[in-house]
Length: 437
Ligand SMILES: Cc1ncc(COP(=O)(O)O)c(C=O)c1O
Image 1 (cartoon, rainbow, N blue to C red):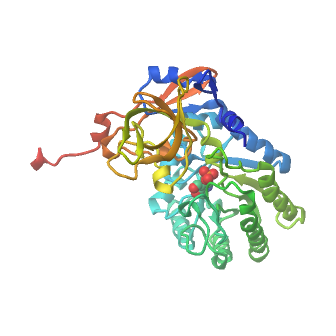
Image 2: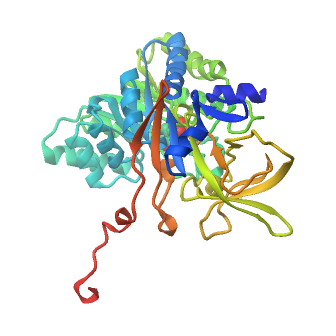
C-alpha cells in the first residue's frame, strides 16, 4: 500500500511537516495536555463500524455486529457504537457492568467468558444476559443456578472449538485441541442434547478462531467445519439455532507494507457458505453475528508521547519516551509492530536508526526496534499508531506510573474522556493493618 494512502486510511497526514490526526495538529494537542496520552477519533470508529455493517448487509440482511468490548472499554466508544446500532460482546462480568452503566440494555449483550464461576453465572442470570458457555460442566452448573433462582431457562449458546485457528501471535490463536477455549467436536452434540434435556428452549452457537487475522483465507477451514457441525447438531439433536456467531479476529494493517484484510473476501468466505446451508432449508434462518473488536477500535487511536532522552551508548542509539509498556504492552507481550511517527518533521535532517524505549525498569520495554526516523531531539513528540485496541485496556500502573488520560476528537473538537490517574489513585485500595500503622 502507498504510504500516504496507508496514513490516510488512519485519518493521518503531514501538513507542512506537522502531523495531523482527524484534521487536528498533534503539536497543538501536546501543548495543552500532558503526555503520554491516548487520542481517540470518533469518526473513524463510526466509519469502521459502518464499513462492516454495509458488507454484512450486502450478503445477509439478518445480521448483528457485537463489538468486542475487551478491545476498548471506554464508555464514550460504547455509547457511540450503541448509537450506530451495535450489540456488544463481553468477556467478563466487569465488561457487562460497564456496558449496562453506559446505558446499553441487557438484550444487546452476549457474555462469552471462559472458566466461569458460579457468581459469574448469577450475575448474568440476574441481569438477563445471554451466556455463551465453553464447557459441558458449566452447562450443568448454570442450569442448577437457574433452577435455584426459579428462573425460566430461555436461551443458551456454546462456543465450538473447530481445531483450526489463526492469529497474529500464538497467544491469540484460540482454536485447537490443546487450546483452552470452547468445546471440541467430540463433545458438542452431547452438550446440546443435554441443554435440550435440561429445558433450554432456544439455542445459539459460536466460534472465535483467533485475533489479528489479515488473510481472509484463514477463516476458510474453520468455517467449513463450523457449518458442518451446525448441520450435524440440527439433525442429531433436533433443534434450530436462533443465531450463529462467527466471532471476531479481523486484523488491521499495523505495518505500512502489510496488506489490509480484504473485507469482500472475508464476507464471501463467511456469508456465501452460510447462505448455502440456509438455502438448503435445514437450519431455518438464524441471525448471523460477528464480534469484531480490533477492526473497529485499533486504527482510531494514537498515543502522543514525548522524548525525554536521546542516548548513543556507542553501539546503539536510543530514544527514551514517557510512554512504555505500562502504556502499550503489545510490543513487549506479542512482539507486535506499531508504527511510530514524528509529530514534527519540519526541520528534518538525516535519517537515523533508533530503538524507541520506555521508562520502565525492564530491558523488554521497547516500543519499536531499529526504527528509521529523522534526527530526533530531546523534547520532541512522537505518535504511536493503531493503539486503540488492546492498548489502554491492557495498560497498567507498573513501576507506580499512573495510567494516562484519554481524549476524544470529533469534528475538530477535543473532549477529555478520561483523567490521568493520580498517585492517590494508585494507593486508594490498599489497607494498612493496625500493627503497621
Ligand atoms: C470471543 C471473542 N470474540 C471476539 C474477540 C475480538 O477479537 P478481535 O479484536 O481480534 O476482533 C475476541 C478476542 O479475543 C474473543 O475472544
